[in-house]
Amino acid sequence: MQLQFYSDADGAPRARCEGPGRTLAGFLESDLQDSTVAAHEVLRALDEVAAGRVPSWERTGNAYTLTLTPEDAILEDELDDEAEPYVLSLPELRDILADWVAFLENGRT
Image (cartoon, rainbow, N blue to C red; front, side):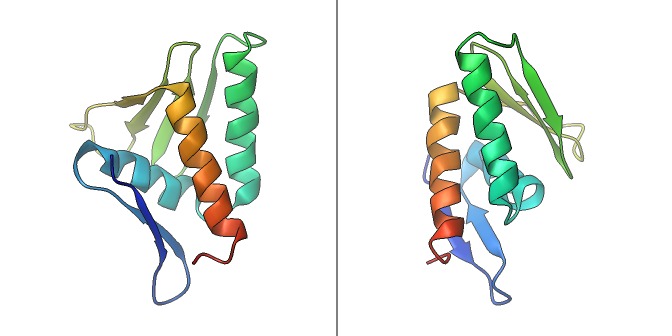
């Protein structure tokens, strides 16, 4: 997956990806947006689920529902009933969220 972060002409954080990864890019843009607080909330929940302290965790945002289980992370598009859920591993999601937070905190360059 080739996920790219950039800022648009108005300075808003954006993410893009070809293929099924567009779901993940959409989640970052529309549900987490420029909020490092929201990203850290998901990272904390991911740690809780991965460690077995909670069996699962779910968050519905502006356009997506994210479900974390010990096996994987599932993103469902709430605006497109035809869209297939996007599934990735917890370590993959952790790495992407860490990159998104770094992008936001480092001036979106």
